[in-house]
Image (cartoon, rainbow, N blue to C red; front, side):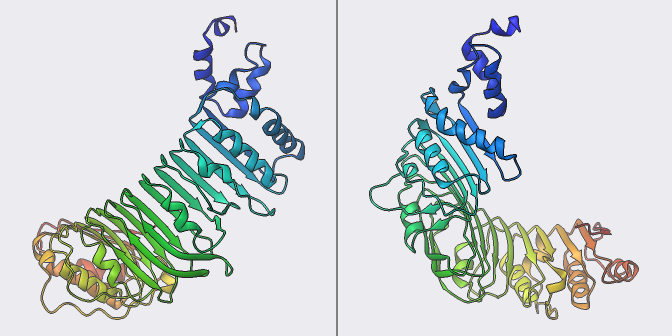
Length: 417
């Protein structure tokens, strides 16, 4: 202990910063000198949940109210607050955010799950130093008046609530340098997503999860700097959808249920890696000139037609992976092989994978077609689900089929969920 006490305050604070905040604060009882060291920690994390004893939750609330105002460091690199259960109230969140934002706060993460009404931490809208913001749960966005987050580069929202249909648009509009945006919208029947508008020139990564229920006016995406897109839209009814201006897009993960995907397909043709699940097939006129890796869900009704279209439109495809999301819901209709062999199958396709192979007739027809026509194929990996069809029947049906590539290695193994 004497040797530790001989260290400088700066070094002791650095040592304490590697500990959870609760332990670092507990160290204050070691000596008078250590009593105030936690007040200089660059990162603070406070966690309370309904499973914690009532006395422990009460102590945490008292600590936040009484001791947080004593914090002395001029800069807070990271402030994490995770409060769950009825023992924590909206004013607890608001007070903590107010104190944190009064410093030069760089990163703020709040998770608030409770039966109490939503909290609206309005002070964070004026935090000009904030670079990363992550919010989850019972948090109400009422973006009104003069607000601005000029330094914010990463915004993550999970199941938060918006005051009205324009709140989301107003929020992203005051983030002029935003680079990464991830939003998982709430799925209640009374929840209004309004018009989801993402028009951000600086945005590089976008992830949107739109539930099957809720009030949605439409979707607009205009992001010329985007390199990564993840769009999960589970609404089966068509809605206004305008997606454009993604010339730098490299990777996309798309899972959509609506039938009109023309605007979407037309905006992602520059991708090199694409994971796609769609209930619809797009029309002609598109070419994926850069696409090298395609992962396609074959559980949807028109997946076989979509596969043919993508093979025809992807002249440089090297890796083709097929997968099932849910075998119980799989309803792909029969395979109609293309009249002419797609260019990529003959000249570039090297790897073929199938995860969750069931062995239905149309599954077998697709796999056999790839094996027979892919001249440069190096490996074909079939991960089968033997709960549907006998392993030996599936193996015999594929292993005895002819192969265009004499060096192709066929790997056949059980699919593990």
